[in-house]
Image (cartoon, rainbow, N blue to C red; front, side):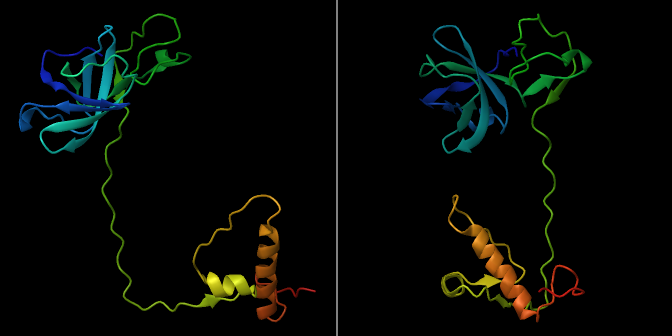
Length: 197
């Protein structure tokens, strides 16, 4: 990535990988996912990706590489609207970093076609609200502690967490037994055709 001559702002603060870029005015604040470039004291180029906007013309960024030797009030340059990596058949068997630069010591990549790493945002889909009243029915497990402290609802999703030897399988088997017992010995998993002995 080559930086442009357009100065976006200056380094305001560095807290690990989180870097705040202070801009002079609101027009200079880069968009979300924009790529910025800044030079460290040791001459290393550090790539920043804008994550969010803060009050006071501040662009909060995430550093792609290490922020070691990044100095306060260093000039920050605009690179591009989004991060792109090279694509194509010549990229097979090559190893690149997140910026698309080769790190496998096999020479430069000559591909000119690039692809953004951020996909376009899909439109939000709103589910219609059900107007009919849903009847809530409690599932009786037969285990007093579950029925009293954590009652289960039919049709809901419930998980059982725990380590080895705590009795998760025993609880599930007891629930299956109670379901079969409630249906007069007819197996609910077999479609009601077989009886459980």
